[in-house]
Length: 294
Length: 282
Image 1 (cartoon, each protein chain N blue to C red):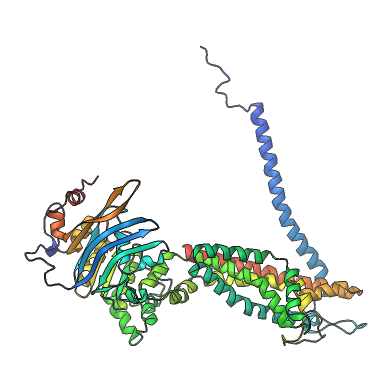
Image 2 (image 1 turned 90 degrees about the horizontal axis):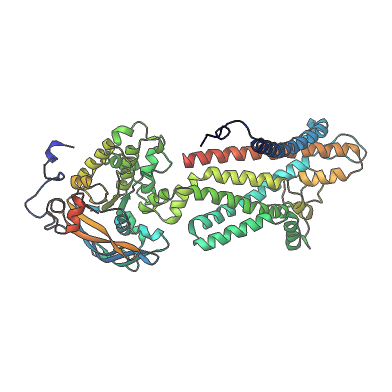
């Protein structure tokens, strides 16, 4: 039998050409979709920066809102309010979140741990307006708003973030470290406190930073719990405090163009803060992963 | 290895052949009676009767899966950490059942130290690795002196005395393992359990650990699990041979023979032991 000349040919057949084309097309579409995500973020940052930058000034950061009809004024009370409320929320959520994570990864029987993780994920998925209205009904009705009630609502949002992030790092702590500590005659709790927690400090910090970034941008829970505030800088969390997101909301509802500019500027401040904290959180996580795995 | 411990006895070298039985008049530290450890429903090691004598090195040898490590970990109740593990029978430590009522596993582990297969120093400084256990147990007087003594006993002091504040993870594998030994010695235990302590180390680091074991038996009772028969022959006074007894689909570890190391390696009483030590194990 004669050898078929085309049988071993490496030249492109029509079918291969079509396959190459489809491959190229799909690759281009996927790349485009990924670029789209980057473009959306870039566009948001760009438009907020362009409209907000002009209203940024020293007095923007140091003064409270000007009396109606006068020019100037700033958002100092909102900045301080956000700082106080988020700090109080973190103070409530972080210790409890860490304890929950410790229970899930160190003490709970496997089935209970699975259930606890599920509960945390569901809690994380709850719409923030529901948390707002829950705290409103629980604490605000009858006794009025306050910064601390806002903090409590935010702490519910932070809790699952802190707990899940911490629990995931605790799971990375190698079992032989725990055994080493227990074999010395340390109790479970001393082992956790002396060996497990210090090893996972980076992850705990990451979870906290992420939760702070998330809580700083939440609006809905604060509308119910801490939105009707005096136009003055106050550090007292027992008073209702104005916060950055609530102030953005009310400024943008205003009829004055100067207020709109302030809303954009405040949005720029919030966006910058959240971008920086998210990046810091990522860097922290990378570092602690390397330390644990390396 | 030092020249005076070299003795040619085929097929492997024996530490010190003796005339009198080495366990005569020795205090019993551990005595297991009908010890069975199961994970879930299947026993990992079953019905072990074995006595460990004071200031001797007792080696546990046998093929993979014969329950050597499980047996060792039942001596300091480290199996308690595995939720499915169940222990039957008795482990008498100086005549007290460590699984008895009212016995706290934390107290057991404080007296019975352990060194693991993989060096597992804490991610702390060299000093804090040794001091941590002391602080936990409240042995805080003369902390520095205690740390120095433990590191010297583990033959590590000279290598680390100038960098005690440096991280322990910067040490070599062999140094890390000696640090773990120092950490175990610092809390003044009575017994040290060693679970294949040299299997992750190179030959030079291994020989340092073996020299150390020779030194330590003056003050401590040591039980060492090893898959390396030469190592057992080099370091152990007594040797227990475990094997895997097949039953249907699975199998469980059993103690085949326990005697002086020299006897186990030269005139084993059981065919299975002979097969294993001469390398004819199927």
